[in-house]
Amino acid sequence: MRPLSMDLRVRVATALAEGETVRGAAKRFGVSVASAVRFGQRQRSGRGQVPGKIGGHRRPKLAGEAGEWLMARLAEKPDLTMRALTAELAERGVHVAHDTVWRFVKRAGMSVKKNADGGRTDASESGAVPGALASPSTPA
Image (tube, rainbow, N blue to C red):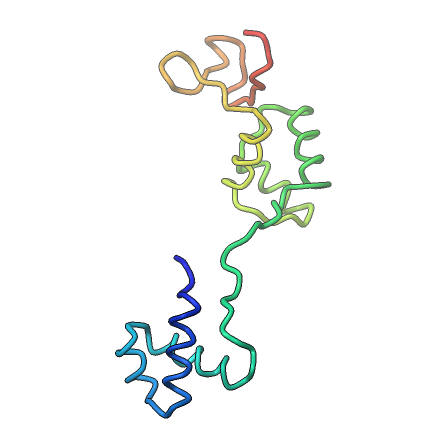
C-alpha cells in the first residue's frame, strides 16, 4: 500500500479547515473517514501533511551472538531439528519461531539432507542421521 498523494492530503485538510464535515470531505475526495480525521488533526497541530515512513528493515533476531551460537551448535551437533534448536534458543533467552531458525539456516547455505525420492534420509540406508543438516559445500 502506498501513501495518499500530498495534493489529496492538502485538499482534504483545506476542506476540513473551511468547515466541511469529516464524513463529507472523506466522501467527496474518496478517502476513508479515519484518513480524513488524521489529515485534519495533522493540519491543526501544525505537523504538515508529509506521510510517515511505511515498512522498513527489521534487524534479524538471530544476528550477532545468537546467530554465532546457533552456527556453533549446528557444527557441534548437526542432527538437531529446527524445533529442538528453537527450544535451546528459548532457554538462552532468545524467543523465536522454528521457521525463523529455518530461515536463518537456509540463509547460511545449509539444508536438510533428503534422498532421491524427496524424503528424509534414514540412518539405515546411508549411515546419515535423519534430518541432519548439510552444507552445500560438503562433497557428495
